[in-house]
Image (cartoon, rainbow, N blue to C red):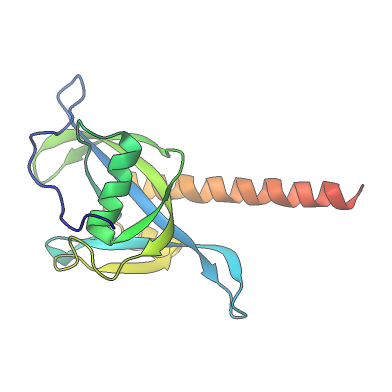
Length: 176
């Protein structure tokens, strides 16, 4: 059973050597089902509203990386707390430095893909956030953070590369 209470407070918050708060985010994704019920190769991603609502824009789950957890554990925790999904955290997409307009300070952000294996009906921030599955193009359009859009583009490129490798492998096997 997953813990259904979101962490709060900054006592365990990590900061880099320049004093920037370190945050971790995830791009929860799945493969879209085809009309025949099979799983296709088109990605769908899960975006969430800010706690202030959809008027503030959509984003991917993210939050502080704390001292008592690995960066992957933080990514998984944020996806559970903010979006109510569980899954497999994959290799990181990168690290970005960005200015928080709300706080006027620089942050260091890490992003990871999360292949969703379970979507919960109840999650810690259900009452303050909405979650919406959408296409990559739709997510790119509504996401309010440039660095999250860059991470999304990296995820798409990674999957295109893997698809191409799989197709080349299948072709080489059929020629034998």
